Length: 205
Image 1 (cartoon, rainbow, N blue to C red):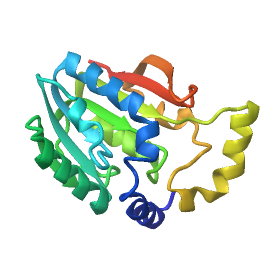
Image 2: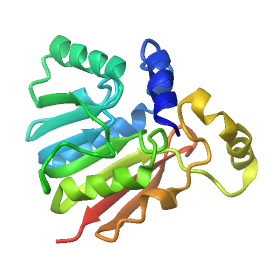
Image 3: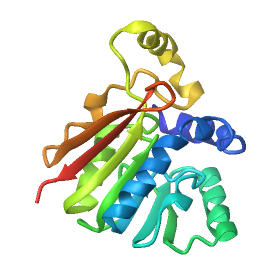
Image 4: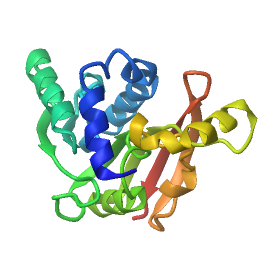
């Protein structure tokens, strides 16, 4: 993905995101909110978008959200104000490849439906690992490519359109599993029809 294409695409998507792609992917967001609430502590949400996941965090967590898209972020800020989401302590415009936080700043990190839309996801994962405290969790919900079947063929067919669509349809899970200090502890299919994946990584102590 090219950064300019991401910016332009999400400027187009912002007005209708919640009722389209956002609605389809809400199962993962709700599960992530419940999971991180049980863990408690400080959470960084990378790619907070329009803030769809923010109401799902319960007592015991504080949430900082970042997004590269100003249009998406404006909607997230409006949601926080409208719904009185006091657990959200900060929302900032930021490039996930270069997070403006010190090392080990957060207890946990969430990355929901963002890793296949950012340039250089390996750099994003490296930054996530850097700002995460030892023993902390990375909760990922995302679409990952399949090697076979009808969906796999469709992913390969639409792959050349990634800059127009705003996401990479043939995105392999290997691109988020390369950090040596992040170990996979959970993986499961998510709706709709298992097209999305639930993935939890844990940082070594």
